[in-house]
Image (tube, rainbow, N blue to C red; front, side):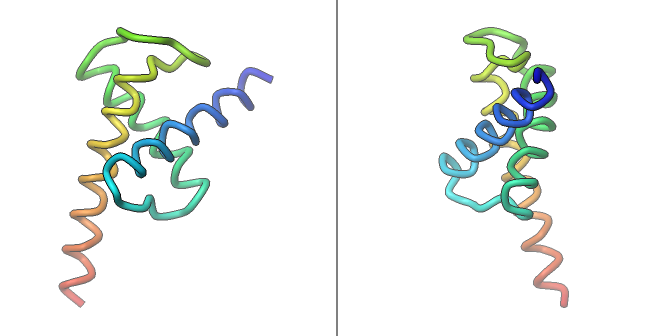
Length: 84
């Protein structure tokens, strides 16, 4: 049950980050979950584990990390689509 809860929270973190940055995450729901998990790792390594904690995620650093990840991925995907 804890893994399912972590998937839901990771998806919500990715979704909130995509709303805040104004760019869609490639892959839909799965992309949001991946962005939430990887963003949490990035955010917690850069900003620490301060703020509210939910399902093992420090919410604020996780959202900031997901924003960074989505921004970088969107720049890379835009550059790759221009090369074609």
